[in-house]
Length: 154
Image (cartoon, rainbow, N blue to C red; front, side):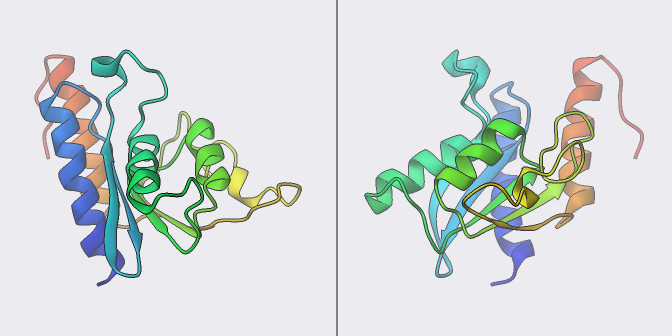
C-alpha cells in the first residue's frame, strides 16, 4: 500500500476525534504493511495534555507489539507533529513519519523547528510531509470554523 492509503486510515481516526469534540488529528502506526497502532486526539476527554493522536497510536502499537521501541515502523499522522510528539516518536525509534498538513504554530518537523533534523540527537527519523495535505488541512479548518460559528467556504 502507498502512503495515501495509510494516511486515509489516519484521517478516519481524525474524524473520530472530531466527532468526540476533540481537535481532529489522527494517527496510525504501520509495520510491514500492517496497522499495529491507532490513535486520535483525546486530551480534552482524557484530561491528559499528552493524549495527542501520535502518543495514543504509539501507546497502542507498543502494547500490541510488546515493546516500547518500535523499530521498522512508520507513523502516519494528519498534522505535523509538535515537539512533544516528535520527542516521543524518536524515543520509540520510529523509522519514518508521514504527515499530512503542516502546523505553522507548533510544527516540529520543519514549520517552526525541525527536531528530526537535529544532528545532535541520537535517533534520526525520516520525515515525509504533505501527504493528503489538503484533505487533512480541510478537516482541521472546518472544525475550527464550526467552533467559531462560521461555515467554511470551500
